[in-house]
Image (cartoon, rainbow, N blue to C red):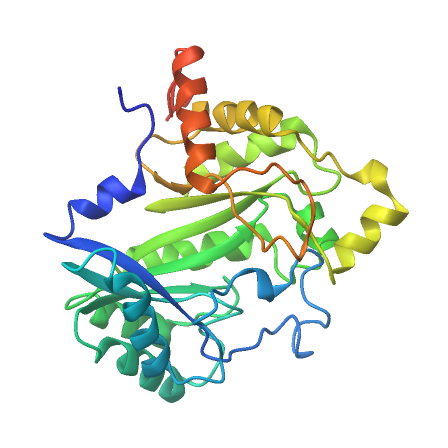
Length: 306
């Protein structure tokens, strides 16, 4: 099949001789938007139980989680390396000494060849980025920033606790040090028009990021947004699967073709998910995206202008 978008997995294959698998780790971090330093209650859409696989529990040490993660994936692919993926909450939100100890513990495990660290753009500083830059000379290191929206009104509405300028500053400082940089965006946040959503593509395209994760808005039990949906359903546009496929294709057309796409959708546990319920696995959705790109004879960056 003709390649119509830059697939992050294909890019990753150029970095390593063997297959690489991410192992999620929950190191027991919190978030400045939960502990009161920036806010309380967290982002309105967030329930971190949606992120973590069963082996990934903060009651286990980092080493135990890596070992269990390796055991979980080893039977599928025996010849492979691993990336320790610090995923839940804000994984740079601690003292530099504690962070170094946690990262080094993960890297000490055999066949772990790098780190992927999920964090917020307001939770990095020069000292930490200098450390990551030093690590990246020996290991694969990617810092993933939750941007979620490039619209400041939306960021305030979802109680994000930072603006888009903060994200641009952190990403620029990370990329300037030669550290691989990723970003997350949510398509379909409340009160965002189609014009605003597609504007994210242009705004993100100007950033020095290596990879982007695209997520559909999911309403999850136990969140403030779930309550908002009951009280003000007119704020929301919960796309059907077909509508979302077309939205993603529209987004891709406007998106910088030099930035790899890591994913198009996310999957919350069924017991937590309120909507949308599409009944599709991630790989099935990717097939639909690829098919729609062909049907529309379009590709990533078709409408992008530098």
